[in-house]
Length: 158
Image 1 (cartoon, rainbow, N blue to C red):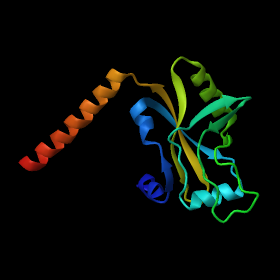
Image 2 (image 1 turned 90 degrees about the horizontal axis):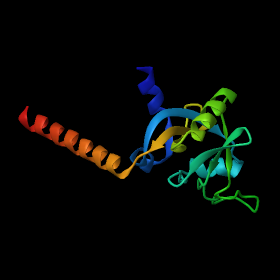
Image 3 (image 1 turned 120 degrees about the vertical axis):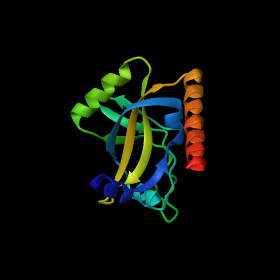
Image 4 (image 1 turned 90 degrees about the vertical axis):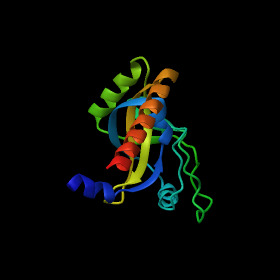
């Protein structure tokens, strides 16, 4: 029951819906993000896109690359760069495990969701995924359509 309560208290900013379509997500990790003040304010306005972004291990750290957090509307000349690399905050063991997994063939770190947790801190849900091929995507779509049709049949019958 507490898991449902904590999910309700998380304010989602951006969701990468293509990630689960393009990858088999095998593991998820919650990571903090190093942000500037104007970036946090822009996120509070709900402006961010993580659809084309990915995470990459570099120099013993993991960085979020190509995530777009637009400039804060009321920001001054010290506003942030919208598509800059942002360092992700993880434990050293997690960084080592994820970096090792990325080195294996076909694995990638994909951001799934950007949100504020119940304490108001910006977090990123990272997914460790293996790329789907075209026939896998068709299979997933077929399964989803069948389950939807099955629910419809059960609802009409009962």
